[in-house]
Image 1 (spheres, helix red, strand yellow):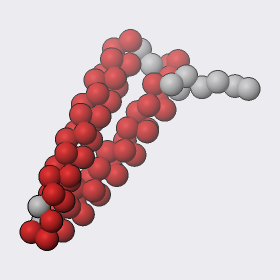
Image 2 (cartoon, rainbow, N blue to C red):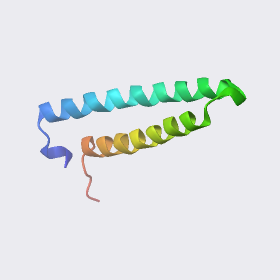
Image 3 (cartoon, rainbow, N blue to C red):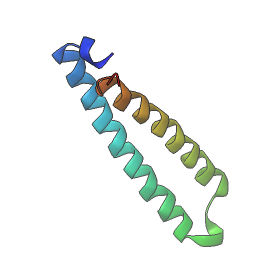
Image 4 (tube, rainbow, N blue to C red):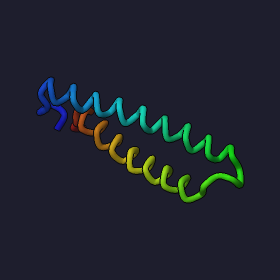
Length: 73
């Protein structure tokens, strides 16, 4: 699929990929900060952030797959 992408499409996917990577890092920091609070941390909020992080990871993998050319062995 990657070889069928126009330069503009590739640039848009790359920009989205970078944005999602940053959001993923931000979620890591937010989760770590909440966990540092210990027992006072809102466990429901931590679980929501972790779930969002997993959704982002799935999208990151999809985008990386779209940007990587298929290699036929």
